[in-house]
Each structure stands twice: as C-alpha cells, then as structure tokens.
Length: 409
Image (spheres, rainbow, N blue to C red):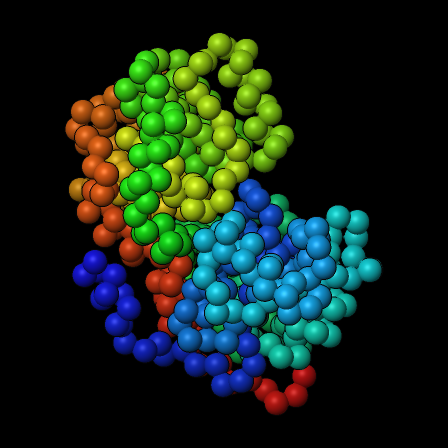
C-alpha cells in the first residue's frame, strides 16, 4: 500500500497541453471496443491513464460494437460503462464515435473524412498506432505520437512519414520493445524521437477479490484436482498454448483454465483438447476485466507461455504485469522480454520454451515452492506497480514535454 501512495504523490509532470485535447486512437476504422483486440485495450487504457493525470482526453473509435444507438448523451454513457466493464478502465475521458459512409466494408471510419473534420480541429496532441493517422497529423502540423507494436499494418511507417520525423510536430515514436526500436532506427527514425515503453497494466487489477476467487476455486477444483493453473490472454500459436495442452496431459491432478482468445481460436483448441482426450483443461472464452482478474487471484499459479521463434523477441509481457498485480505465483517462458521480471526475486519460475514439456515440471515446482496465499505475494504486487498504465503514460509525457497548440486548424 505504501507503493501505491508513493505513486500518487509524485512530482507534477513537465508535460503541458496549452489548449485542445489529448486524442487517443489505435487504427483508423477500429471500433471503440471489441473483445480480444489488444490494441483497443491499449487505446482505452492510454486514454484513462492520461485523464487520470489531469489532462483533457478524447478516445476515438467507431460505434458498431453496440446494438443500440449511441448518438445521444445516454448512449455515450452506456458506451463508457461498457468500456469500464470490458477493459477495467475508469472514466474521466470523453469519447468520439465516428461512422463514415465512405469507409471500406468492415470499418467504421477512415483516417480522412470525419476524423479530419470532427477530431483534428480540437486536437492538441494525437497519440496513435496508425501510420495513416500520423501522416494526416504531420501534414497539418498537429502534434502527434506514434506507437509501433510490430503489427502488419504498421509496416512501412518510416517511409510514409519520413519527411516529417524531424519536424517539431513529431513529439515521440514509441517502440514496444528494443528489437522494434532497432528496426525503427535502421529505417531512419531519429534517436532523439525514439522511446521504448512496455505495455501497461490496469490498476483495477490491484483490487482483491478473495471471496469471488474462493467461489471460482470451489467451481473448478473438484475432489480429483488439487491445484488450479490459469492462463489469460490470446490463443494464437505464438502464445505457447500447445505447451499448456502438453502440461495438462502430464499433470492430471491439476485443473487448467484458459480465458481469452477469438471464437475461431477457441474452437480450434477445443477440438484439439477433445481429440487428445484432455479432461483437465477448460476454455472459458473471453472474459471481462474483473472476471479475468478474479480467475488470476483464484489460481495457484498463472501461466505466461510463449512459443520460441522471432515473435518471442519482440513481445511485451503485458499479461505478466497483470499477473504480478494479482499476487499469484507465475510461470513464464524464458525469453528476453521477461528477463527483468525473472531476476527480481519474485514468486515465480521460468521454463525453456524450446523444451515444451519443461512447463509441467516448472508448474509442479511452483506449487511446492510458492504455496497459495489468498492475499497474494506482496513482492509480486509491489513489482507490478511500476508497470501501470499511469506510470507508463507519465514516462511518455515527461519525454514529450510542453505542447503549444496553434490557434488555427
């Protein structure tokens, strides 16, 4: 609790926005929320963290996620409640819901059109992961921050905005990992604009849910199961889900529960589980933020698996930071992105992702070395506080400094 109080009483930010709003949007065309879409979690939490620092903030996305109209104040309030339920974000920021009839099929809006007419005139600074939006801002000399997370649509960013990278309106280029930063430097991004920032974690994960966690344990731990192992996150192959299936087969007295993933990935792994006859592994689908946090606090161990290969080098261990705030002992893949956590004397172990069966051995060892504590391991929780979205945004805005907004669009 001391660490929480310390974080809340830090010195004021050197960042200043003289007029306009801090605009956050992930990719042109995105809905404002969608289950199992990591960049929308990023956008909502970035907006919430910025607003929590006392900066007028606007989150931009499309309205097609909602089965009801959201054009009026009541509709916007409902959309805000859904953001809080799904992502665990607190209010304090405004939302802009864009719908452009010229947008390609499957998208709500485009980087031009409504975004230019409705959002940019009141923008003091735009924070985005879309090269097209960064380019629209650069052309109009509107201050902008771009984040590179090595997604397919981000390829070629430097070639699109190259002429603008040295201009004052380019306030920061954020790389999610050091390998991504190296690539951006090689593509011509100037070092004085480049900042490496891990993903963040919601402070809502700090809330203890002990009664609810015990109910989850009672539901999953039937007499034949002695321990509960949980995973929360995407179900792509690169996440090492195959390792969890192998561990479940080797540890029949452990119940494995996996939360998250798209419907397609859930169906694929459900078929694999049935085909192999694995009875101690349950897929419970994508859960809202509170339910996912409850599962993590209910578990004896939480899993941050990863398949070996080039993608492992560029990952940012967002889920591992959330696991830290749960206080539950973790088992993580031994990759470069988790080295700083693994060396911190925490309640957790690592396994070699190149030897998938090592996961089962690490889980069994963790049960003995770190017995479950309903209140969580204090050293894990304290370590997780350094990775909250607020702390991430504080570092970014300290790097950006004052922003003087021009009087005319």
